[in-house]
Length: 367
Image 1 (tube, rainbow, N blue to C red):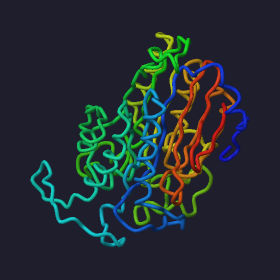
Image 2 (cartoon, rainbow, N blue to C red):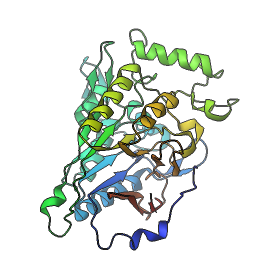
Image 3 (tube, rainbow, N blue to C red):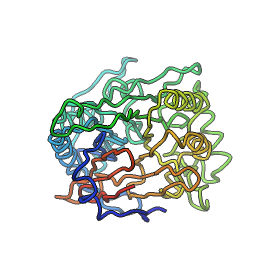
Image 4 (cartoon, one colour):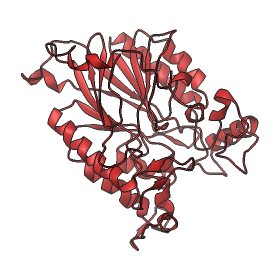
């Protein structure tokens, strides 16, 4: 649970000297870059907003050198403070950007996300992005679709939702130095945990925003005046805050169908999301609102799913679900590692195990 990594971390250098992994992917989360001086979270944790982008660039260079099969960014690529940089000691570039409705906006968040993407572009392969609450403090979902190449679905309600799958290419098959004899097929399944939420949903017309309002009203007595406060809530009920979200029924049905198809095609699946899904892998305040529904579905496909990786919590956590054997890992944030520490990971996928090669404050492990 939480920080109890239940495996033999010291074996990472010994287990895999002879057999190359079937796949290797890069992993990074919660970069939360902003053009402001270093600061603190609302709970007092130190944050290094400019160094975070340097760390991301270093990670991308390492991923390129290792020729990983793909990279997964678990969200919060920029910080919400980009929306008001002067308040936090930064300087505003006076350049304006015109929105689709004709409104003029100062594009600090837009520029910040472009700068991080430029830093990551050192890696020439596929980057799979999900998004978190901090992107939504700065950009609309249609802009995120453009910048992060997230294939949002326009649901019948008129709301955009960003869930998708990607069959990871085994580029190592043609690489004699890193070639693997494994026939494993590996699919990434990316969830949108801000499907049901208040953020960037129209107050007047969004069905999903109305559902989010009802969920928070029913479960958090601090809402709406202190919508991000879990004060007075206990246990997993602390998840009912406005910086979290939930997964609506259309996406849950898509999840079932995608996992069923993976089973039929004899594929293995790794699930990626910004918010954690398992309550023993993270702090309660970071969980998906309806984590229990999502977890029930994942457990039904324990023969298909290897692991679930998430961000959002900033401090790492891990649990192997007793019922299914699925590994749930919350990944340490880039943002809260002081210079010169650079926090990210590479994950080697073998037929019988996962090897987490952590850098900086990201813990290495073998599952």
